[in-house]
Image (cartoon, rainbow, N blue to C red; front, side):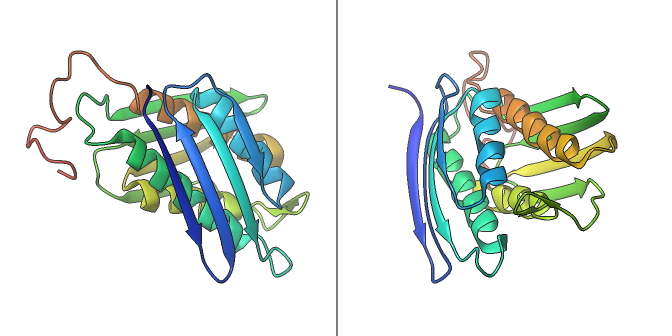
Length: 197
C-alpha cells in the first residue's frame, strides 16, 4: 500500500476534495470550474508521478481566486497527510525546466517550515478564464497547506502559457523528488530529529 491521503474542505465559497497517492503512476482525474487550472493540476500528477483526484466547486462567477486558493490549500494538506511522520523522506526537491523559450526553477523543502518565494513577474492577463496572477495564489496556498518551503523563480520566458505551465511542471518534478523515500535516511530528515526544524 502506497502513501495516500484524502482531504475534503468546504467553505461558504468552495467545496474541494483531493486524493493523492504519492507512489502512483501519474494519473490525474481532475474536475474544476477553471479549465486552465484543471490542465495545470493534470501536469502535477503526470510530471510528479502522483496519482491525483481533484473535485472542486467554487464561486467562479465572482472570480477564480477562492477556488484556486482552496485547491492549493487542500492539495498541500493531502500531500502533508500522505507523508505521515516523514521518516526516511528525501525532504528536498529541485528542478530547472524549459518549455520553449521559458525556463523556471522550483525548489522545495518538505521539512515542515512554511515559507514561500515567488519571483515570476506576470502581467495582468488571462489564459482562458484563468487570471495568470492566480498561479502565485495557488503555490502560496500549497506551501501553507503542506507546511513547506517553496521557491519558484522565472529565468526566461515571454509566452504566458509557457511561463505558467513550466512553473507547474518544475514544481511537479521538485515535489516528486522531495516526496521520495531515501533508503539512506533512517529517521526524520533533520539533524534535530523534529519536523519543522
